[in-house]
Amino acid sequence: MSSETPNRIRITEYLDLDIDREQWMCNRCNHVLGSARENYKKGCLLHDRDPREVHPALVAATFNFSPDPSWVRIVECYCPRCATQIETEYLPPGHPITHDIEIDIDRLKERLRKGQFIIRGQRLEAVE
Image 1 (tube, rainbow, N blue to C red):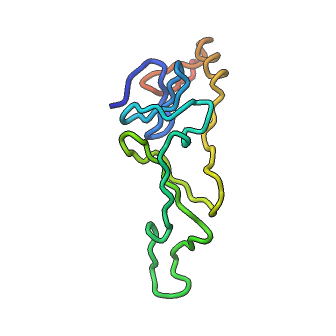
Image 2: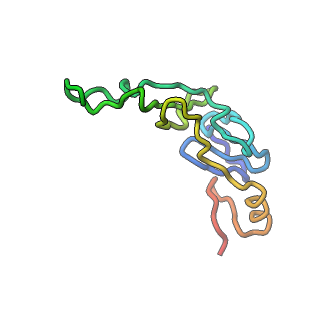
Image 3: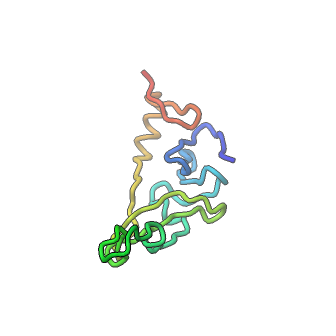
């Protein structure tokens, strides 16, 4: 369902950047996740998973290769409209959600305007 608008760039498998509107978007359902000048995760549904659900014990022993939830948590980020899982991160308990993608939108727009980059098939390409 992703839109083929001329100024939309695929950033990750499920996350797009609409340059004109300066918004993060789910590329499966086109739901706006928020301003591209902020963390896209603010617009996601978050699920804090017990790491033992994802990585069950491999042996019946004190050291069983399963992560200790007092040391790590798994946070899953979902599109609130279509429930596509956009991102997963492993964090220490109490650690804030990371801001993992930050794009200089003003500079990107300038370079697009100058013709240094073009957008082809939702991919950013340098002009040689």
